[in-house]
Image: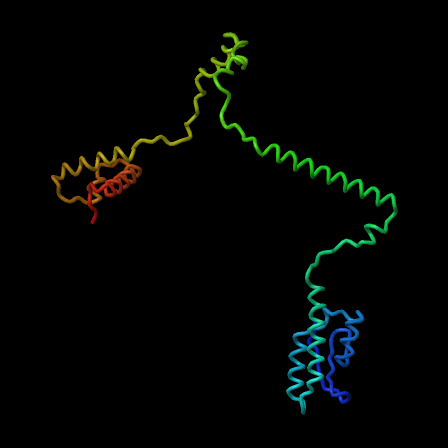
Length: 238
């Protein structure tokens, strides 16, 4: 939507506007909008107001009557535009309800009577059920004899296959593809503490602590053991 162009008119001392679908005096535009010949949503009222203030400021003299008329028309246009842009509740037309055929009117009266009857019945039931409360506990022991015994018809022959399936040992899982754990952190912690004992309490380097390791995995586990001992406060690192 382009901004309206407003210019002075030589006749009547008014001003002209140019909006999509119209170019001419603002008075004529207002009449066309009120007659629904121009869409009110195509009129940028805020911009028109700013241009009118600029026009009135540049005019040789202020026309109070024209300004009052302009404000009144803008208020009407703004109300029309607001009504177009905001949703509103659609009231049922009385002619549509009453002015139909007698058969349709009778059918609607029957529907209304049915809804009223259901509403009264629901209200009566709600009032009657208001005095009840749900029971949160099970039945008392005196009613236990009323329940059938679920194991009465079960024989030992029925339980035998179930017991055999439960007691059957699970199948062995093939772990040949998994590398076996040959050295644990707990074992490495014990080895580190024993080596410290052999050092008579003196400081030891990491190389000395892993001197007896056979392969790389032992060195890694020994390093993790030293970190665990440090976390427990049993060794100090420098």
